[in-house]
Image 1 (tube, rainbow, N blue to C red):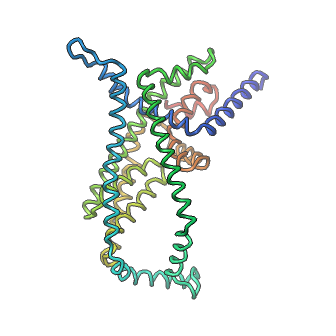
Image 2: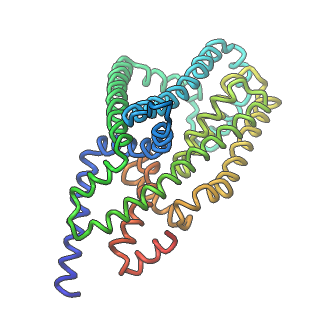
Image 3: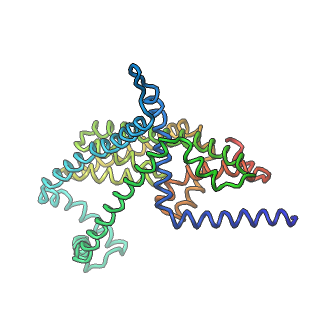
Length: 366
């Protein structure tokens, strides 16, 4: 390896280290910028449509087109959230009407059988019962310290949400107003010798990420619709909220469908706790699990392969390893951002590291 090659590698390594530190330290700000960039990509066709409107001699000013587009985007987001909240409230009212005495009688037999099984395999001592363990855990959880910590976190989250909404809206406005603003900002910090490559990277990123996020939205809508229909056919009153939770959790690769399915089953059980466990409850649980499994098999092997094939274009094992690494580094947020981040990494590798075989291999389909 020549001295020039070593210097180039050291330069690349130092650049990646600095970039990684900046991303980690300013993660929330970068998240606002990325969210604004995604919204601006979705909103640009609407801005262009408004710009073409002409009434007599009056033509829509570009700033008015931008403002109306931003308003439409956030109205759609808040309308979606507003549609979900009433169902959450109705779910809470249903839970408040649950007959606790009927629940206790319904679960008495299966709890006793479970307890005997745990005694048999030494999972419980003879002095313990499932009821005493649950009671102890609840009392340890429901204490003053827990509630004070919960409310302090609640206020902190509320403050962060307000800052996030305002920051994202503010940045999105200027990205919509000038569609090249993000690119121009990147070009300002790019050395002249690399500007052609960076322009290619940004152009490819915009094209592939637009396809990815639009495909993701389509996939979520399909999952919500199918799960909701399935739960409605089972006669569940809270079918829509189960479908929405399952669809949103589907954004998280691999573990998201499991989490969404678990929450969905628990919500389905919560309004039917007066059922007899063996004759009614157990068949209902099995049917719900069958629907979740069936939908996720169809989604994983058919829908996602069709929807994401034009944007991701990577081997499933390759994506699994990327998601696993992202989960180790940043947990659930890392898993959500793993695939779009990998799309960007592959595009960068194609422009700057195409002389290496590994870069050629992972970028051969883009």
